[in-house]
Image 1 (cartoon, rainbow, N blue to C red):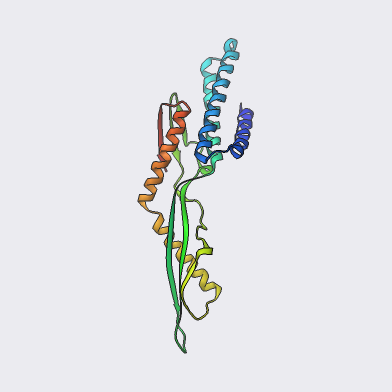
Image 2: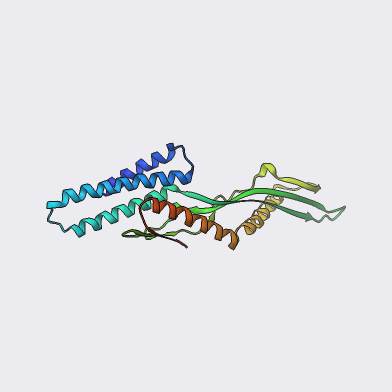
Length: 218
């Protein structure tokens, strides 16, 4: 069963690349396909185990372990899943004092889009619990998915007097990046991400046949 699960994961990885849908619909489509495969496998195994000396309970237990592992691997294959994007801009400046003459000063406006969501490849082995028609999923921590979110092509120098070394410009960039992160990483935005994620995963698992779905946040 372990080798079968690995082959299924490989097949799902290929399907993920070729399906002409958005990320959300790809996930739902693959989970529905997985449901068909798992149900078919369970039916075949039950039929073949009709005359087995092993008790049926033990067979079902192994099937549950294998199907949970396939669920987990399929979720991990999604990778980064964005649930909220925030356009943000920040102005930073710096002044360098000069012994002779006027001080050097520069002010820049940095722009970018911060993408908030989950890296589902980080999901733990114990994150998914399946019991009958109930399932619970513990998501990893919400994070900024791309640390290099500043669009340097749209950086504007609004004021400059004097010349500045690359190390000064790098310092301005880092300050802008830090401020932009602080403006986006808020309790309100995290709440929105958690809500959107709960809705999406609940929808997927219900399409998969589960009646009771609980999505938890780390």
